[in-house]
Length: 355
Image (cartoon, rainbow, N blue to C red):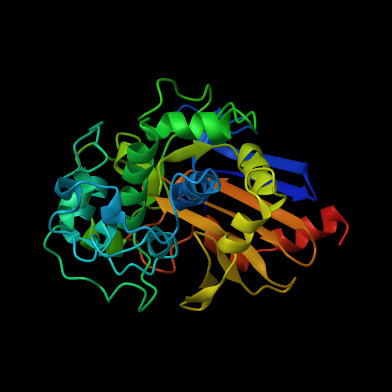
């Protein structure tokens, strides 16, 4: 049982053309997975946040080269290195050099490991406290450093500029217009999707060393833990959205086809800079594949992993969601992104899409 449950969606042009769901959304209760089962999408949430930011620039409410300190109060930025100097563009592209709360050992143990409090609700700024007084990773605009902190700050920015809660902006700007009825900002929306997958996580020596096992985690077969007692509220704007494979595909197709942003915003989003072995735009990665360049993002949180990509040359798109995460369990631990890289799913997608 490499993955308790997996759902896949394939798109072509502007249409969802194929869906697949297998496995168990809940192992112990033998609840079968289905296409309308929702999963956490992890850091693909960042693409949703980027869309709202770019919509705000289109409405001339902000500019990409505004500094964060032009908008957020000193109390929010206090003790966060680079936060006062960094621009919105640098935050979106992970070139702000601000330390990530996800890399802090104390945060890992409190939010994903041995010190986790079951069902704790995390306020949006709580994770930022783990990086206050930490040194910067680099000067702003100097180097690529992937950081969840950037998106907590961008979520606060959206709330400050609009005067509305982030979950309401997501609902009004993206979820409702695209009829994403099962898509939510988990922990902050008043309702849950009707079908929600239980959460499981890889448990190996790396995870035990890095995070540890909370008292509320329950062991399952094949070295995985049931971590459903954890709350995705800790991820918020950096990784807190839940969705189905089909609805995630609807979002990706709407984005690439210009249904959410104008041409200038899409050009801004796809101005590529070095990002390790890939390239980064404004919250979109671009990487090479056997079918040419692929654009998208992966996601991996406690209990879920996902990925969503489209291929520039073939106009084919793939979304994968699973209810097992691999964060802090080592680079080789199975997750949706590794499944995307190492399996025949991309080949299948192109066969189904006719290319």
